[in-house]
Amino acid sequence: MVVNVAGYPTDRPQRTMWMQSGCMLDADDAFLYYKMDTHGGQSGCPVSLWEDGNDITVVGIHTGNIGTANRAVRINGDVFNPLMSWRDQA
Image 1 (spheres, rainbow, N blue to C red):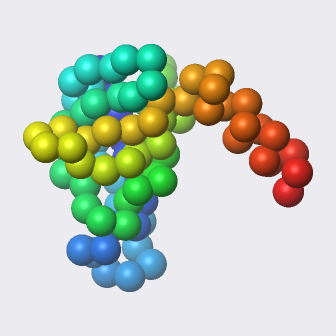
Image 2: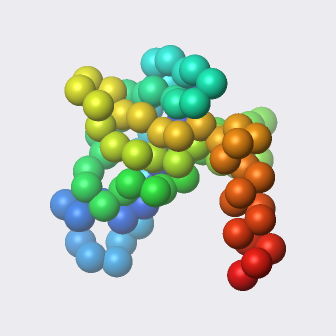
C-alpha cells in the first residue's frame, strides 16, 4: 500500500508544499509506519491514501522519523472524535 505525506519541509523553498509517497511497512492500532523521505517541518501533516484514483482519505498524522521508518498517529476513533469536536468548536 502506498501512502502520501503533503507538507512544507524546511529543506525546500519557503511557503512551497511538497508531497512524498512511500510504501506502508506496518501498522498497529495506534501508529502507521512507512518508508519515504520526509524532513523537519512536516510533523502534523496528513498521511493519505488515494482510493480508486480519485478519492483521498486521510489515515494518519505524520509525527516524524523513528530510525529507518517514518511514523504517523493512526486516525482511529480515539483520534477522529476529538478532531471532529475541535472542528465543531471552531
